[in-house]
Amino acid sequence: MTRLRICSYNIHKGFSQFNRRMMVHELREGLRRVDPDLIFLQEVQGLHLRHAEKHPEWPALPQHEFIAEGVWPQTAYGGNAVHQHGHHGNALVSRLPILQADNQDISLTQLERRGLLHCEIGLPDGTPLHAICVHISLTENQRKRQLESLAERVQEHIPRDAPVIIAGDFNDWQSRANPWFARQLGMSEVFTHLKGRPARSFPCRLPLLTLDRIYVRGLRPVSGEVLGGAQWARISDHAPLLAELERA
Image (cartoon, rainbow, N blue to C red; front, side, top):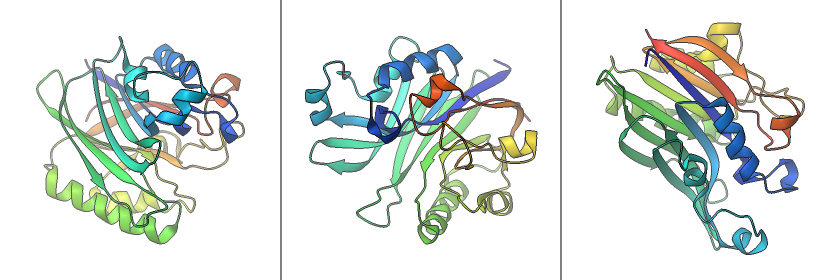
């Protein structure tokens, strides 16, 4: 494997925009068509008993396992929000072996539960790749503190020469994350590197905001695409980001 094909996607808990339709089956088929090696998922339902009762086609498996079934042999999940019907959080779906996984709670309020899922992936040449899936807060003050927790995680647990991908929904309404990542972690954003600015990914029907990002270190961006159009706009309120990377 000379290149790594990755996708980052806020799946809106398997429902379309405004929760009008359950779309997890269409979501799975869409991801299978683009066939990434590694998928960073946010707003993943690990369990929801009420939805399972209400929707006859609700998968018996947790959403990340349902998406991965029969195609991607490895998954990891970090539940961040626990409620009376179940829980949801971030997940990683991988064609490559997940050597270890750890979920860190970075929530600052009870109303907005957030976490970062840190996985170590085994590349074919034996190099460990560190992959962190994140979903950052809607409010600026919380975002700053959560990014500080992320920086501490990277600095304390990841060797400086190891390849790293940090991807997810950053809710960076004011576009302040790019210089912060460059300054604090020596990381660059894939779409900014390739096209001069982060990708517009929200709302999916008419993308205006650059909320979703893919940051890398020790890897070179080769291509980047926002998966838009009517098909993807029916599935979630976010558009998926697809990128190809190679070793720097």
